[in-house]
Length: 390
Image (cartoon, rainbow, N blue to C red; front, side):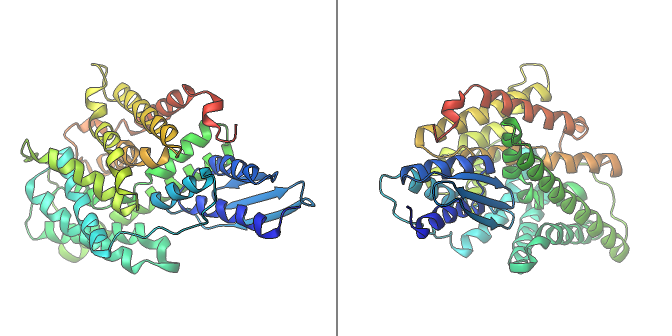
C-alpha cells in the first residue's frame, strides 16, 4: 500500500508539468511513467485546466486538481522531466529566474529584433524598442489577479503610443509597429501544444488550447484597435504610411540571436536550451522564404513546420526531454498569429508590415500548412518512440 504522501507527490509532479507548459497528453504519459517507477498504478486524465489521478490499487483513491491556465517556464519543465527520468528522485526544485534587468532588456530587444528580421525603417525599429519597454511596464502592473489583462493592456498602450508618435509627424506604419511591440504575446506554445494534441486525437485538450490561443489573439487585435482609435480622437487621425525596408545587410545576423536569446530569457529557458533552439529560430524566420522550392510561402511553411518539429522532437528524444522546449521559439516566429493580425490590418486598414502584401491574406492557408507540417513530422516517429511510458 503506497503512502498518501507518494500519491500527492505524483499529483504535485503533474501540477508542476502543467504550469510549466507541458502538453496535457504528455502530462498523462510522464505521470504514468513516474508512478510506475515507484510501483504505483495510476490512471491520469489531464486537460488545460485540470488534472485527475485515479489509483486503482490504492483503494481507488482520487486526487483532482483544478488549475489555472499554464504559463511558460521552460527551465522548470526541463528540470521536472529530468527529475522524472532520474534513478533517484531529488524532489521538486524550483529553478531561479533571470534577473529583472535582463528580463527588461529582453522585452526591449524583441520588437526591434523582429522588425529587423522582416525589414523595416530605422525610425520604426528605434521606436519599437521604446514600445518594448512600455510592454515590460505593463507586465509589471499586470501581476496576480490582473495577469489576464496583460495582453490587452500592452496592445492598448502600444496603440496609444504609436498613434501619438505618428501624430507628431514621424512616419511609421502604425499597425505594423504595434504588432511588433506585442509579438511576444503570440501564443506559440499553446498553438504548438494544441496541434500536437489534435494530431494525437486528444480533441478536448487540443480544442481548448486552440480556443485559448484565439482568445489571446483577439485581445491583442482589439487592444491595438482601441488604442489607435482613442489616439486618433485625442491627437488627430494618423496617416497611412507604407513600410520601407532600411535594414542593412549585416543587421539580421545580430537580430536573430538577439531575438532567440530574448525569447528564451522571457520563457525562462536554460541557456544551453536557448543555444540548442537557435536552429528552429532560423527556420521559423527564413524557412518559408527558402524552403518553398519555387512553390511559394504555403509549401515553404509546410516544409518549415515539418523541419522544426522533426528537429525539436529528435533533440528532445536524444536528451530525454520534451520537444516543446526546442520547438516554441521557431513556432512563435513561424506561427501566423502575428500574420493573422497583419491580415486583419490589411483587410480593414489597407496597411501591411511585410514587403509581400499577399502574406496577410494567406494566414489561414499558412496556419493549415503548419498543422500539416507538424502532423507529418510527428507521424514519422513511431507510437513507441512518442510514448515515454512504453
